[in-house]
Length: 286
Image 1 (cartoon, rainbow, N blue to C red):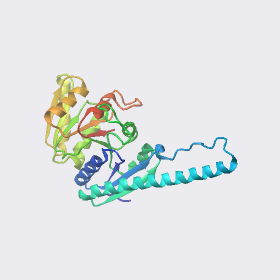
Image 2 (cartoon, rainbow, N blue to C red; image 1 turned 90 degrees about the vertical axis):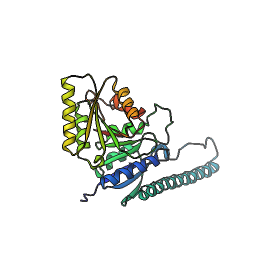
Image 3 (cartoon, rainbow, N blue to C red; image 1 turned 90 degrees about the horizontal axis):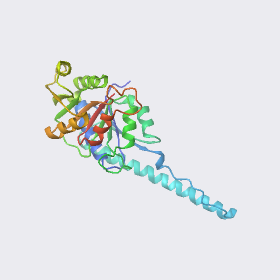
Image 4 (tube, one colour; image 1 turned 30 degrees about the vertical axis):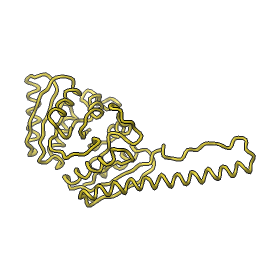
């Protein structure tokens, strides 16, 4: 069995796909990984079946059905050709950025089914915040993103609309199980080697929170990182967003669930809000 690392990147025809490619190439270079690019033709891409024959006499009805079948076949061929073109463009971007091992996959079906079936072959799932069917309202979050984060057991990198080099990373820490996993991931993964790391906790200042931050920093320092810590007050979503924007952080890392929401069927409210409003890429750990 191959031990080579592979990143799984999902591309479509949206404005975010180029950003996905650049973030993927950046991550692959730091992790020494290859890339598998997936474009999934969902159910909405399948030809529509509609009975237009009505009470047409038999001969005319047969000809009409034949013409409809031919149109369906042409549309299917065009849809697949479009998908292959998207993959070819994506592969060119990733290869031009220096990634040597790049593969493409065209799949039909549900995107989450594809992710869950293939995620064990990858180190990380990379996806744009919004897909080609989404509008660009500020608070809109692509439905597939939320479904992928909920279903995947691998880290998910949700890209911002434009790529820029990552130097400063904020790790959101709430003391819960998933935020501890996020700390451990940052401590050991080469993706974060040599980057500036700041652990931020939202809450009151007391002995408990101070100890929690010190313990978090110690874990990261044991992994060879230079670490700063910060305690801020307010609502988690607003406080974290303000720190990211004010201090120029390039990436947010956080647990995909708050510790009080592990058993719910939707991702934690703080997680959803941060993905919606954050202007930098977000790495989510379950």
